[in-house]
Image 1 (tube, rainbow, N blue to C red):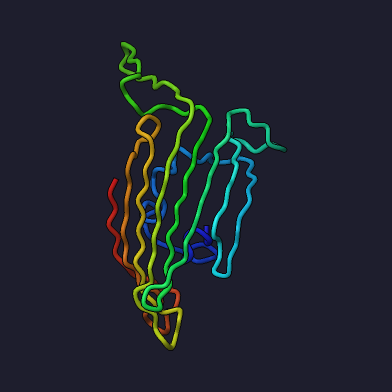
Image 2: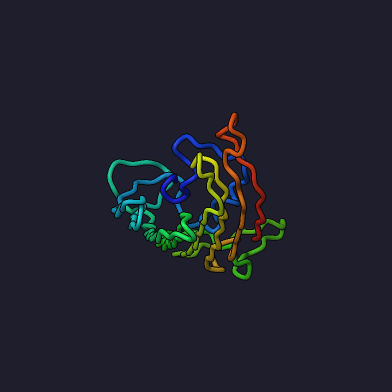
Length: 191
């Protein structure tokens, strides 16, 4: 996760709501537990691109068996510098071939008891654009900085509860010398 979200992971904790970091569109697209294989291209500044094949099942096995299809994940990152401050733009796309419960309620059957049985659909997709830009860096201590981070995620209407999600945040890191791991900020989230 540290390569997708550079200020998180690698033992760095964050106390914000997960929806400010990770678009909720990913919930239906990526399986919880599975076997994974992939290839990544690293550059001088970190991860630049990658392609991953995920086996869609909810229990670990040995080997790739593809009993419920696959999820294909592609990602690309472009590093930027604005007025001497680092930034990055990322695009992540997934396409799943597995069977997923449909959130589109027109196909649901209602029984007399009032319970609802959603139908299953095959295949789903989502795409996320993430951007971050440092706004200020202390010239004496590079661990003290402020940044702007935002994303917008899109997914198909048929298999997702959240079709469009977005979040924008401004966050400051290590502003007090005696508390270098502290961070503070404000986030706005929309689903």
